[in-house]
Amino acid sequence: MHLFKYRKNELYAEDVPLKLLAEKYGTPLYVYSYNTLVRHIEAYKKAFRTFPHIICFALKANSNLAILRVLAEHGAGADIVSGGELYRALTAGIPPSKIVYAGVGKTENEIRYALKSKILMFNVESENELMEINRVAGKMKTKAPIALRVNPDIDPQTHSYIATGLKKHKFGIPIENALEFYKLANSLKNIKVIGIHKHIGSQITKVAPFVDALKRILMLVDEVNKQGVDIRYLDIGGGLGIPYRDEATPYPKELAKNLIPLVKGRELTLILEPGRSIAGNAGILLTKTLYLKKGPEKEFVIVDAGMNDLMRPSLYNAYHEILPVVKRRKKKVVSDVVGPICESGDFLAKDRLLQQVSPGDYLAVMSAGAYGFSMSSNYNSRPKAAEVMVKGKRHFLIRKRETYEDLIRGETIPSK
Ligand code: LLP
Image 1: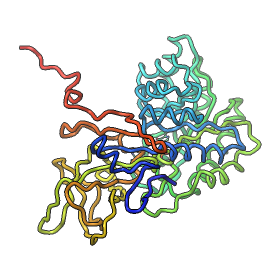
Image 2 (image 1 turned 120 degrees about the horizontal axis):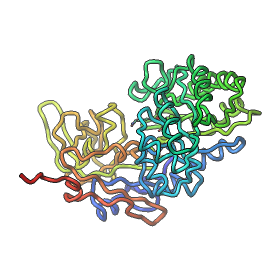
Image 3 (image 1 turned 30 degrees about the vertical axis):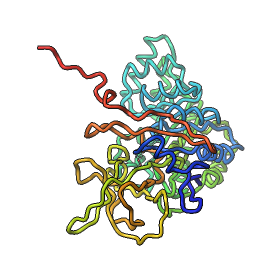
Image 4 (image 1 turned 90 degrees about the vertical axis):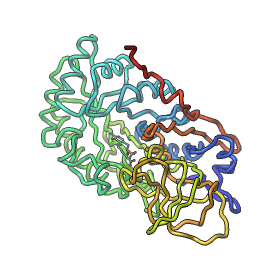
């Protein structure tokens, strides 16, 4: 559910016409709906209220400070994968006691920073990493709280680039080796084992893979407990899908309804790491039509947002709905919506049936709140887009549009 709706023929973000935002802040522009974000985090909280839990928002989906602050105010923690994300989470006011840290390549500096910040736990992805965390914690005369990321070998039935829980993936520890690994971790002086973690993939549109993965993990928890290791936190990762088109994706309450009975009666705190299902439909990318071009085989709508602003279509062939900001009674035409970047892979939509547009018309690329701005780049030396948050009738600039000076910040030309 989101709050980008037409009123008469104009598309609004909550109570603000998108056209007004495009004119005030310029395009390309990311626009987020405050109340959609709140609705999503509250839906998770309500769904899991009968079992102790922490909702750790996955910062990789969207790490704008204003968004993190909204989520923090509603009780969210953070799932981070880098020192930079830790810095953002702390700056936004997320308590370290609600921060979990995953990722296969944590560096010594990042480990130090996380230990110093007293995060809840490291989700450890390999034996080498475990030994390194043990070493760094020893140097700092402290104990590192950890969970092992276990790979349950479950197919989440999603795009191959965003599936993570199969044997062939670089993530986690194969479930068969997990018990040995726990024994090793438990024997290390500067490690305190407190949890178990799994994440099987993203944009998962069925509940079954979550159920299967959790069942496998719980069998392992029982075995680990028998070894005298106290697993208190069970982190089930993120991955719940959202409707980009017309997918019937499960709500958090369906997830909870299927998962809570499996853990009931256990002395555990569940951790969830949703990213997309919180932020995805809470944001759109506003863009302006620059030119129309008729090729020999195709018609192109050339807009001012490119793959550097929203990479998902180019990278995953992902579908994002594109809506006219002002609906007109015009015929519909099939065209490719493309950006200004010098690559054939620079498109937002292919062979899309759209209301005929004219140069100057604004378009809204829907469901762009997750993995949109956070994956954007300066490719072709394009300054990054501005970001705005709408709350009812009010709107706030939450990130300035980058300038040309921003593009070269930090660069130097060596003197001869
Ligand atoms: N936890 C871990 C350990 C993860 O690796 C991820 C996502 C999440 C949580 C959050 O998953 P979510 O709830 O958002 O599905 N760039 C891709 C998505 C990559 C997801 C990577 N990991 C995309 O644009 O579709």
